[in-house]
Structure formats: C-alpha cells, structure tokens
Image (tube, rainbow, N blue to C red):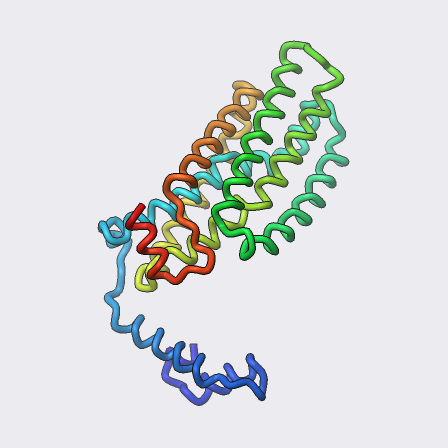
Length: 259
C-alpha cells in the first residue's frame, strides 16, 4: 500500500522490517515498484472484459473449479452431517467429532503437499476420493431403503462421509483457490477473482438450500448425483486445468492457450 501511494521511504522501511534489518531488500523493492508501475499502466478491467477471448480460458478454469467444488455437495454434507449419521443409525455426536478432527488433520497435510505434489495431482486424487465418498453413502442409504444388510448401513455411511471429507480437505477444498490466484493476468485478477467467488458463494447457497429436498426425494439418489458431478469434475481437471506449480504467469497463460 505504501509503494502504491508513493510513500517510497515508508514502503522500504516496512519491507526492511518484514525481511529483517540485515536483509538486502533492494532487488525485491525494485520488483515491487516495477509491478505496481506495470499494473497502473494497464487498462482497468470490467466484468464484461472477462468474456473476451484472451481471458475466457482462465475464467472457465477458475469458475469451473468453483462450480465443481461447491456442486459436488460439500455444504450439504457439512451442514447436515449429524442428520446423515442419524438417518443411517449412527451416533451423530461421535460421527461429527470424528469428522471435524479428520478435516483439520487432512487439511494440514494437503497444505504441506500442495507445493510438492502439485495442484493437478491433488485435485485428481481429491476428486477420486469424493466420487468414492459419495458412492459409499449412496450404497448405505440404498441398503437402508430396501431393508438389506442392516448391520452394514451405519458402517458404510460413516466410512463414506469420512472418506468424502478427507478427500475434499486434501485438495478440492483449498486448491481451487490457489489455482485461481495463479491463472489470471494482473489487470483482471480482482474482477475475475470476485466473479469466481460470487459463483462459489452461489453454489454454496444452492447446495445448502436444496440438500434437504434432494434427501427427501431420494437419499441414495442425492449422493449418486453428487458422485456424478464429482466425476465430471475429474474430467474437467484432466482436460482443462493446467498444472501451475512452479510456473510464471506467462508460462501458465501459454499452457492455457495451448490447451
């Protein structure tokens, strides 16, 4: 902010304090100044600019990942975890506590791996786990509806939900936000990020609002629907999303345009 408003001395003092009093900040300060000057020379983007050909591929990737993230059912599962466990005949308190602990652990592991394994492998592993994490509860509710293998119903439901949240936390929860921060040119980053976030929040609302209605329609059908969306998400990641790990914006844009 100091650099952007022209307070160069204050900017350098703040950067020096951040990096340490013995650190050489001259190169980094020059890079930041160059970045700000370049950004100020670029034309201001509007939301309509996102649909121009040069930006459209990046927008499709960013928004597509947000659609897959939300419409794969995460908020329905999160908000109604206790109800799902109760419907399957399992203790809601034990299930919810286990769910929360697992989410924290796997999210921490995913954060540690994102710069080692890469974005795309984590998304694919996560997507595969989400599909399985939907199919297993679907099987559980199918058995319950048809009065089959009553002893297996709670075990399958808990296993499936825990697999689902572990898979989501490993990649699909955080990685779309990482990719979104890396794929947009700097002059549209703010507008594009805002648009993708709007889509994300709309998806969160839509899934939360419709989850109970879908469960009333068909409990196992709901999870099969989410499994299908997550399977489509895997195809989307394979065919459209580039690997952004260790790449500059120019390299990412070249990969997007080539694909």
